[in-house]
Length: 251
Length: 251
DNA sequence: CTGGATCCACACAGATACTG
DNA sequence: CAGTATCTGTGTGGATCCAG
Image (tube, rainbow over all chains, first blue to last red; front, side):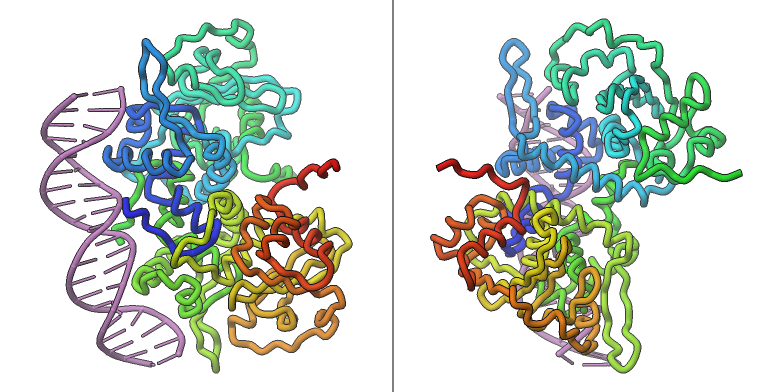
């Protein structure tokens, strides 16, 4: 913890000293989804050595990016969450994800996708302008990783787990109480909306999310299966996309 | 160069594998100012070991972020510059700088400020909305580091050196030809504008740029000296600021 | 001079085992 | 569950050296 510095009086250098160490921004990526316990972070980042995780959390806490909070009894659980200052990194992390997603090729051997990384990928490609006056829920399955997304009037609420469990999402971006171990009752009006859809991702969603493939391509290649009519996949692809809508193909 | 990976199929992870290694984003920060030679990068990053610089440049080249270009004769110089893909990191680096600048306290012992870092700090705080219909040039002196900025109709052109040498700035963000060793003639209409100002920075500009101190505070503390009337410093502080203008003090 | 390559020492990352 | 301890590599820091 010699606090290696770059020796420059510069915002970029200072930011890198705070969040530029190995694994730090991936920890922050997961915490942007919601507060997490030490074990949650470990399972979300299977390849991080535990001592590195512990060290990073201490450094991020010292930098004022993360707070370590001990839940009141009886749970007594330790929870890490972003400070307001740390949460301001959301747009940066989303932008970094958009930029890096364009270099995502094929799934490399041994590479996994986690719930949190998929949630952030959805957030990073969400197009609020396409969501005006729209109310729809999606359930995405990536192997045995399941996440859900609810679009409601221009805002997006994401979470881990199947769509029917999404009712615990309250406020901006939830899983807060879920991570804390609380068992919140489900507001009935959010469950089982008739427009709910299930998107079954058989392979990386990235080609779809990054706009490399059209919804039709993706559907034709069996990458994603969607319940309901094919037009629903077009809507999904319009909601979660990088950049402006592609020009309509003239045919 | 074992190309350490995070083992996650995720845009953020991929981005970090490309530009997340130590020093990489500082190299990119400097290249965002303009193409640079190996020696320029070394002097802009005095604390980087030369083998690390060479390794990073190769990695960034392989990742498609940087290109190594050999100038045609007679100069034959080696120049590194960002690819279009790499240049897309500009907003990210500026945002990271804004975020990190708020943790810049006092100048720490041994810490320096370079021309490129000051140029990026200016860019990151530039408020185009304040620049409408405005045409003014600034020369900022930070010890013996001198940079200049020209504001003209909502756009900002920055470069190293005093204001009178700024005429080499052509197009979006110059020093391109200067770095390439070319000796471009100066368009006469850009030199010696009557609204040119000199801002003499006696201490870190950050408290001003980050909005922590008002222009009046900064002036009173002797941090910045400006030629002309004090009102000019207010304009400077309005042009280069983080966030919306502070509410007017009622008095 | 520029544009690196080479060498060494060591701090930090990686992996695994262990503990309150 | 929430870490700490320990060991091993390798990437980094620091210096010097070298070819065009």
